Length: 196
Ligand SMILES: Nc1nc2c(ncn2[C@@H]2O[C@H](COP(=O)(O)OP(=O)(O)OP(=O)(O)O)[C@@H](O)[C@H]2O)c(=O)[nH]1
Image (cartoon, rainbow, N blue to C red; front, side):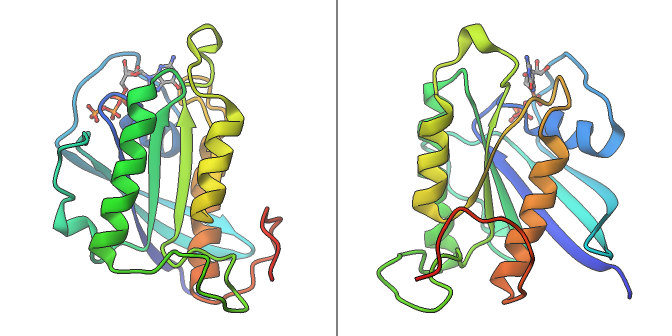
């Protein structure tokens, strides 16, 4: 089977670890320095359920509550990884604002009041990521808060640490699952929502 091409945008507030997660996934390393990103693209081929995927990861510039959602990320993107840091309330607020803007831009209905057999499936494939989970002492956002937010979006959820390479490959695996689900493909994965 030929590899499927998938383009994934990684978005979130400044300094939450978007680049670090991308570099950890693609190169298997963590660089403990901070160099703000304008935009970077990473490529990696990965395999899931006997299918190869050529991933193009678009590591975007940090967003804040005032940023206009960049129009180029509303088209030609198969799935989104929205990142906050578990040490930052601000980044958790920004990810929620970003989500609203993302839905406005992509023009998709995410509302569960629209009943369909697949109403537990988000129309925009999204994985919410709480990064920096290694910073236990500085934790501000609980696992449950993150999980609840992701459930309200019908999105995937992972807490991760780019530094400790914990949960990183799960993020990209999960976004591929979300993309397959939104394409109507039945991926044999455990989900946390019941189909009504
Ligand atoms: N302890 C810890 N530090 C991290 C982790 N991920 C990233 N960092 C650090 O957080 C800082 C910001 O990381 P980046 O990956 O540059 O963050 P970014 O979201 O790409 O930043 P912008 O490009 O400004 O949007 C750097 O000093 C990283 O070393 C993590 O999982 N744990």
